[in-house]
Image 1 (spheres, rainbow, N blue to C red):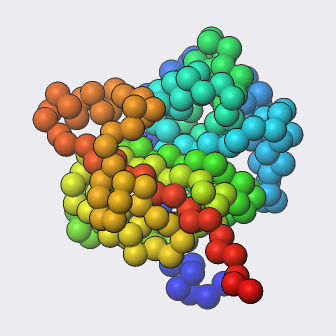
Image 2 (image 1 turned 30 degrees about the vertical axis):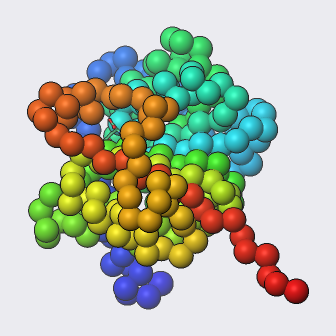
Length: 236
Ligand SMILES: C[S@@+](CC[C@H](N)C(=O)[O-])C[C@H]1O[C@@H](n2cnc3c(N)ncnc32)[C@H](O)[C@@H]1O
C-alpha cells in the first residue's frame, strides 16, 4: 500500500470513548448483535439475505443512539435500514429498542463506516444515505478528521444507486459550508434544492435529542439533499 494511502487510512473521524456502558447495553451487544448485526467479513454483503427480503436499502452513518434510524424504519416499513456506528453504548441502545419494539427492518454494524462501505456494501446498491450531525471537529487542525471529505463523497457516490439521495445535516455552519462546496463540486451529484442552496428541513428527518439540545442552545441547522445523477446514456 503506498505511504499516502496508509496515512489517509490512519486518520479517523472518531475517537473511541467507551465509558459508561450499562450492563443492559453490554448484554444487548452480546445477545442481539448476532440477530440484528451484519456478519463480519471483507466481501460485499448479500443485502437481500441480510434483511430477509428485497426492498430499497437506506443507510445511516453515525446513528448515535439510533433515534432517527428507528423512527425512519417505523415510519417507512417498506424500506430496509442499515445503520453504522462505532460507539458501542449507542449501538446497545438501538439494539434494545429494536427488540423491545419489534422493529424488523433495521440491521446494524458496529464498525467504521468507511471500512464497511469500502468492503461490504455493493456498488450502486443504496437508495439513500443519511449523515446526521457528523462530529464537526471544530479546531482547524482537526478538520482532516471530518467525515465529509472528497474521497468519502466519491465512495458514497459509488455506493448509491443512480437517482439515490444523500441527505446530510449539521448544526455547525462552517462544516455546512464545506459540505455544500464539496458536494456542489463533486462530479455525479446534483443539489435537489437547487444550485448552491441548503434544503428546507425535510419532514422525514426525525428530530433527535442531539438536535433538540441544539435548538435549546439556539444553534442553527443546515440540511443538504443531493441526488446521484442518473447515468448518462452515450449519444448515438
Ligand atoms: C455528533 S454524533 C451524532 C449522532 C446522531 N447522528 C445524532 O444526530 O444524534 C456523531 C456520531 O458519528 C459516529 N461516527 C463518527 N465517525 C464514524 C465512522 N467513521 N463510522 C461510524 N460512526 C462514526 C460517532 O461515534 C458519533 O456517534
